[in-house]
Length: 463
Image (cartoon, rainbow, N blue to C red):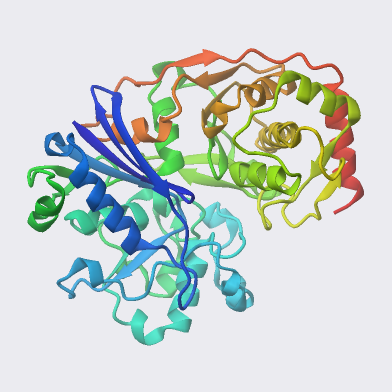
């Protein structure tokens, strides 16, 4: 039995996997809490995890556990504190905290060039380097006590009993801290003497320890349960496609959807990235650069629906979308506080204040944003959709209609992040993928091309 802890920006999940099949799933909401600054609610996460493990009948059978989390998050710890629960030197900063803007001018002078890190300058704390820069200047006494900077998956692994470790998928996701071409820490780490604070780099599939006895007692996890190094969540989704033997030599794009929609392009050209906003290179578990483009798809979908009075739990019907297209009801970016291809544009509501089907407008919006991001990557080859947007089949079909020249596929499950992370347990580079996909049938809406043209004209008229 394998266990996967998946800490996303909006939800936390604990899943049990046996023979590559999910056998149990538990989840709860995740949200930052107030304090000296907005921060991750690590105590509540820990309490929920311990209680959930203790109550699940599968826990005693778990032989391996792996953690996957959202990016742009670190824990600064003092290992001299014997109680791991109280070893945080400062609270875990929420990456959406805009108070970091107070150091932006100084940080922009200090951060490496895009050519070095393949990481753009992003809002708030989405560049981990900006977080460290601000924390060191705002809390110098506390920062001086730091013995290890732990990326978020490895922090939770350490809390459970693992040794301190670092890992490249979290180091290489728009942090400013990693040089993906040279495969080493970037110049800002060396200049600020942060490199020595990062623990040894391990592979995502490395076993880095076993469950602590006191955690075993509280949860019923066996003390022999191995803890694996862990992985950045969108890279966990990408991993299953990386392992597809048919994809080893061809270009393809994986679209991982959740709070963030992240497009990951295999064998893309990193030289194209800097010319478009919010494009960058992540790195995969082997340390290879992966061309990426992002927008906050889940967040924007929800914001559009609630702004227009819609229910995010209801999908649009075909007639809803056709009527929306016929009437050119639309909204334009930005609904994400500065992210994506049109960050900081002023949104326009080019529709009734309470349209009949807000979900149709949000669905069309996300499909067009996906297509824009594919254009920004100059993406060729097949397109694979993963994650939350699979629950909206018409959105996937719209992508297929807009991208008529490319084949679009959908994962047959919506747990790509979990199964990708689970595959790290007893992982081999030559692993066969546990992935199954099915072709997406493109929709056939009348007037869609006219609607897309009108949307782009509206965006270009008003920034």
